Length: 344
Image (cartoon, rainbow, N blue to C red; front, side, top):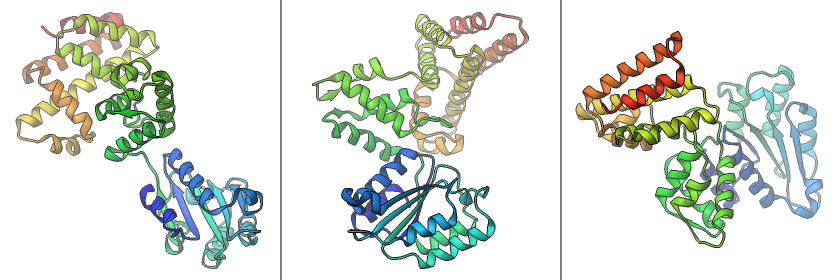
């Protein structure tokens, strides 16, 4: 189940007595856990009816004893077990016999106890412990938000802080933070921090504008490369050189910058080629393994170059990369020469 289904279950008082919540988006897991805790446990008796155990230290006896303890002055007891290694297959802190014991216990958990396992690591769905939880309870997988869910989350966070923001400016914020980039370590917590900074910056103004985001939003390498290529397409050589210089001053290795420029032009070439063959924007993304909003950017940039020119640029970039790696030319100078000649 995703986070929306879990929230619905909590709201409708349909949460099962045993659950496993896992995934890369720790912010969602933490938010779900806070909501469950608030819904089930009275603040006055939290010390007696709520217990959190770290999986690396928790034994099966600890877990079972915590679950068997009767709630005091409340209807239920909440037991959280974080990062139990049994789910990932490591099982360094739990023996095979102990794993069998906890699995057997799943069918006997008291109605007054809610046992929730959480994991920020990959979970092995083939393991019996996973399958048994699925049999007796619910499993929620919380990875990065995408598409409309992500937009709605950002919009809602601004609204909760008394601000309004247009969709195009949400897109700009997401590009700046780099949350959606492949293999990006950014989480919703990073987005939350950026939103808080922007809200503080706009002060009493109700509407978040493009200028506000530009003033505060961090520029990722990938976003900078997009802007640099846009400058090349429109002939803004001076601006492209300025972006290159900024990236170098920020500590980005010139070899990595070169690799990203090559990658960008390869995608633009592939997109233009596929458009010429009759592919739609929606059909290109799955073929190239890139998200739809990125496809739209490539389509836009591809209009600035002919297929023939893109072939030439890729050849020029290959020579630039070769000159850098062979030591024939100083790296930054080699990229600057490419940029200056890119619109010829």
